[in-house]
Image (tube, rainbow, N blue to C red):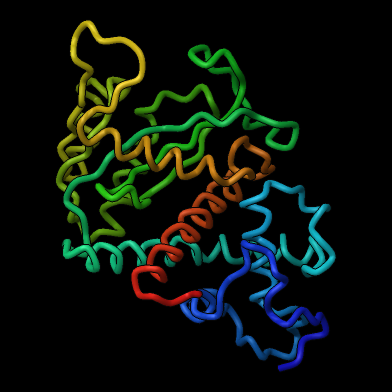
Length: 275
């Protein structure tokens, strides 16, 4: 198939997919055949554009001319997000990376936390004032396994109690792991009988990891430090540093894109491919 938009598959940007990365990713994105007559732009070029935006934080309208038009990229991104393409990539990569590390494919332990993202004019109605942060923004609630790989994610307004999305998070975790998760580690923000009961409804024991009495400042706590590292990974993607998205589903979807980039890079390095 010869596409009207000629880019020869790579633009030379560091965010471009290698051949092996594309071969791994392509089957997840084929919502219609890649040689369908109505297709004008190479899906690989479109995904390279998405990766470029997520990594650099550039506004869509400032995409370099080497990429397909921003309107095409945004529309295709929404279709991929709606079909959970990036989530599926992350879940399969998580299993592969765990097996590579001689661990069970599905985790039995997990960690939950939220990350506050300052609002922008684009995120508009989702922005809410958070008294603790003294700023307006959104919250990204997520659960990871003990390697820091993403299991589930929910985006809410910035003033939502961390415990409120717990039911949705736990339900998704058990769906993607086959009810394999037994323990969920959390900070003091998740304490309380109601939170414990919510986790228990999904056959998960909520374990609140408390700070030692008398301590101040930042401290790496057992189990809990893993999700702090995952949050640090996300800060490397400038598009996710703040909430620049009009739709919460887009903001959530771009987190799955970011984790997919990180995990695919690691998988390729472990298998000496992707160079």
